[in-house]
Structure formats: structure tokens, C-alpha cells
Image (cartoon, rainbow, N blue to C red):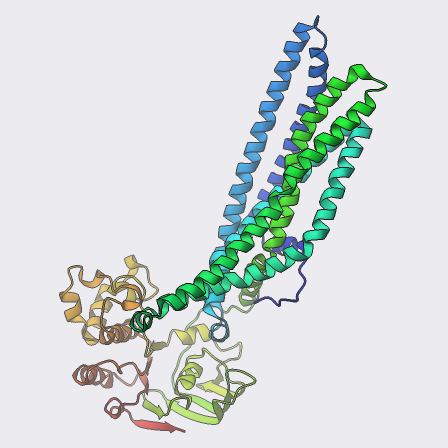
Length: 557
């Protein structure tokens, strides 16, 4: 979460957005800017043609000239409108494409962050940033482009009106600028607060949804739906009211300005007409048309500013995530295989999850030979899962060293991505996606690239054959979200099948058979016990029956 007291300027947001543009997007931005200039020029031509047309209307004997000027005016009006429509379309398309690019990059970045990042970061923060806040960033980009195009158009119309009549243009412009300037000064602190609160509420709203759906079984049993409903309703209502406030602040000045603009125009024209009464109608008509063209871009400039300011904290969350992406890419190693030939050594390892917490491991030593079957036993909180995470390279020790065949695991020379390919891990709580059995076993592999021979072997070993045979779709039967359509034992067997399919030579079972009946567990463990010495087995379990296959057991206090 962004520090509530951190001050963020609009310029900083723009710079960060520009830094994250690809070369292709920068070229598109340049082309759009050129289109903005052409559109602005068309507005100048349209406005310049209105005064001669109105003057010709006053000359009853000049019908031929009137028709010509009318024709020119209509053509210019059509060209101007067409360019505005094209600008709006391309602006929205550019913002949507860029938003998709940035959102995909943010998601890619979150998946590629180290495990320690995910231990410290709430998933609701990540989800809200990628889904909701990326939409805010997309809209911010769209409004930023609208701000630029409207500024071009406003300045073009402004300078055109100055040439027609400096005094009236100056009075009207000063009135508008003072009005918007005072308004921005008045609402700036309020907008900044709205932006901070909105960014936090988006996270809280996502968190409420996750918790409600995640605890659905307990919610039904405890009949506490109302508690979760009220919590979500309260957060959602605050978010909707904030949106209502920002939308009001964004849209309301337009109606006040219409009154101010027309009033100033009439008074200025009447004062000017004392000396030139005949010219008042063409001038009044020209400025009425000019104000009608001037107000929309001026309002869009102000509205864009309000929107960008309102969503700046949400936008910054995404942009900060993208900056983490660049740091990750700088440290990214080529994915070669890291061999394991001899042993894993822990030397005086210290580890804790937070600097303010106690050490989970303190001056801890461990040696695991290749081909060994090692059991880890201990009370909850003794550090069993922590040791597994350290062995897998997912976390780093605060002090001490972890060596693989004498090489320090967390030095640049060690290919950690290659080490991951050696690991086949079966956790106690196996995550299953709402896909088929085959896709859950061949995790992370496209359906068309699944090796059916390896799949069948993994299914057979993990004793999932009956599940396949009893389903009409066989290997491609859906298991439901988080495996809700199958039993807990079947979920764990899918986890074991996944590890076997991957084929890693270091097999790690973290309470992986706790939901299995004794016969099924014995059958699977007998197969694992028969694995050749190329495989190293590390087991965490509270069952002595599971650990009887181990060469040695390590008791953790």
C-alpha cells in the first residue's frame, strides 16, 4: 500500500507512465499528437469561417456569396467533427491497448516475484492492483490524452478569437481561468484525500470478496452471511459515494460556466456595440459559436485533471509494480538445469519471517545426501515447512549458508531457476484450478502439449485410475474450482500425480498423504520407496507409518 502521507504530483504520474511506454507506443503517441494538431487547425478554420458567413447574412443583395460561404462553413464543420471523432476513437483505442499491455506486464511481474514477496504481500492487494487499479490506470491514460487534445483545441480557438476581438476574448478567458483556478485550489485537498481513500477501499473490497467466498463452508454452517454482507456493503457503499463525489466535482463547473460565459459575452458585446452597432450581430454570433466550441475542451481539461488526480494513487500502485518488473528483469538468469550430484548442506542457518519476530531456525545445520529418504518430525511451528522452502530455494536465510554440491545456493553463479526444475513438491493443501484432471496434473503446460504417456503413468502411480474411469470425460473431466467436485484424498493424489509427472529428482512431501487412507498411503509410499538412488526424498509427516520408509528421521524441537 502507498504511504498515506506520500505526496504525488500529476507530473510524477505522467513521467512514470511515459517511462513504461514501449517504443511502439511512443511512436503511436507521437502520431496521436500530430492528429491533435490537425484537429486543432480544423477548429481554427471552422471558427474563422463563421464571421464572414454571418456578415454575408446581413447583406441581402449578396445571396451567391452567402451560399458559397455556407457551403464552405458546412464542409469545414464536417471535417472538424470527423477529425474530433477520429481523435476520440484513436485516443480510446490507444488507452485500451496500453492499459492491456501494462496490466499484462503487472500480472507477469507479480507471478515472477520471489516467494518472499508473496509471503509479505496480501493477495487482495495484488488482485485489486492488477484488475481494478489497472482499469483506473487505463482510464487515467485516456483522460491524459483527452487533456492534451483538449488543450490543443482550446488554445487554437482562443488565439482565433483573439484575432477577431481581443477585448471580449480577454475578458471571457480571464473569467474562465479565474473560475477554474479558484475551483481547483478549493477542491485540491479533497481530491487528494478521495484518491488515497479510494485506493485503499478497492483493496478492502477485494479482500471482503475473497474472505467471504473463501470461508463459504464456515459461513453457511455458522449462519453468519449477514456479517460478511454488511462488511462488503459498507465498503462498497463508501467506494460508490466517493465515485459520486468525484464525478460531481468533475462535471458540475460546465453548467455554471455556460451562464457566466453567455452573461460576460452579452455585456461585452453591448459595451463594444456603442461605437460599432452594426458589427454587434456578427461578433456576437461568432463569439457565441466560439464559446460553444470553447467550453467543451475547457471542461474536458478540468474534468481530465480531476479524474487523473482522483485515481493517481491507484495508478501509482500499478506503475510501482511495473518498476519492480524492471528490477526483476535486470537480475533474471537464463534457465539452465542445475545438477544435483552429491549433497545439500545447511551451515549455521538463521531464518525468521520478519525482523521483529523470533527466529524459526537458529544456528541450524543439516546434511542430505543424494538418494537419501529423510523424514522431518516436529511440533507445529518447529520449522519443518520453513526448511522445505529453504531447500527449494523459495526463501533465503538471514544468516548462514545453504550449499548444493558445495555451491552457494543464493549466489549469482548458482542457477536457481535450474534448481527449481529438480524439485517436485507436494504440499498438504494442493491448489487445483477449475480445469480438467489432465491440466491440473500437467500443471502449467498447454493442453495440446500434455504428454499422455507420462500422464497415464502418473495417474496409475497415484491411484487415480478409478477417478478417470468413472468419469465420462476421463482425463479431461473438470475437478471444479479448488477441486470442489472431488474428495480431499483425491486432491492430494492429484498433487502426488503432478509431482510424478514433473519428474523432479528431489521429491518433497509436506504432509502430502495426511488425507489418504492407510492402504492408499502404503501403496503410494511403496512405489516411492522403490525409486532408484537418482531420487532424493524429503518427507514431513506426523504419521509414523509414512516415515517408516525413511533412511533416517530428523526431530525438530
